[in-house]
Length: 425
Image (cartoon, rainbow, N blue to C red; front, side, top):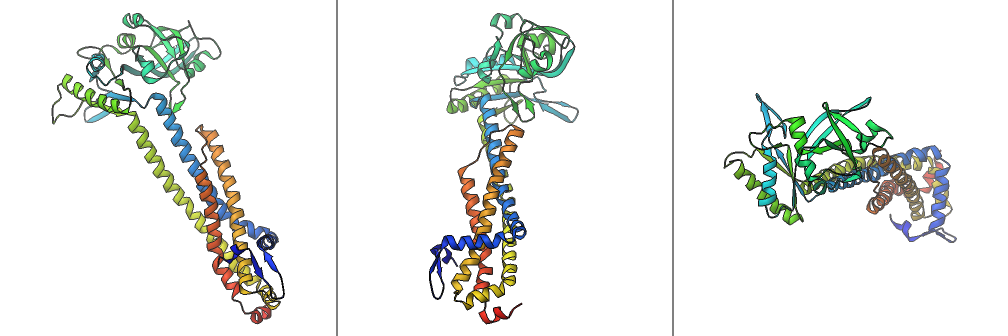
């Protein structure tokens, strides 16, 4: 059945017909039945375009999230305060006052593998400037936060140690906050009100984009001491309560060591002994990247497998149409055999028609899939990624579908008895 790849068939009196002529005749036959050919190709087009588009979208989303997490630093551990309880209801992580600024300072001085440590408070608050107002996330931070989180002012400056010590009422705003409150006005030196307290804007952070539903540019940073005293209140029994501590390691090995050291140090400071549960939670950014990559990879494989079903449907469609074509062209087949066409020649012609349908459908499907992936990447703002493997796989699948779907109809056509075929209507 694969004799088509030999590139010719022979007629009784005569000449060798090259592969190009076989394909040309197949294309002419299919073109004369454009509607039927188009409907036959539709299943292949949908299947191939779905495989390529879904694979591209999955890889693009994966790469986009990896870039966002890496922008936060994959060499960072986040330690979150425990969850408070109200009756039998457990509130979110970070809602309890189990971590303090003093814990962060202890990790910085007593955990050798911790390269840099930063503590922060986080609240959602209403911010007002002139006639504009917005609800945004307020971060009370120390001086290490920009380095640990790899985020720096693109305009103006961050606050100083003296301003942190004196709980100065200063603010560094994100680009989204700047756009919402100030529009095109330069915000440096302007005063905004956060929960009724006036803060002078001294900087604008560099844009970081969105991470899932969270806009990382819709944030305001103020000194941790100012936030603790004026916006939150010192609600820890000892020291300054914080929602989280960020620990940066020099590399992945140092990060794992820092995680071990920080965990044991916090257990000692909080008097936690087995079998007591920790009143804090550690999150490794590298683990988040790895977990997300695995989840997206499995999801992509699952959806591609589902999309592959449409390829099977497309193959069945090609087989059905080719079988119908054999019936319709029985008399034509009889005439060709009568003038000397061999079984191999008939087999090759019908196989060629099936392959032309599948390759044309595959080509259109690949182009459609690339366009859909590009449109999705631009609409939802993630990297546009097309792998060579998906293109090769798409072409291979379309060729395979044509071969498999055309074998039985082509074999049936080649075995027709010429006398019986000539007598058919």
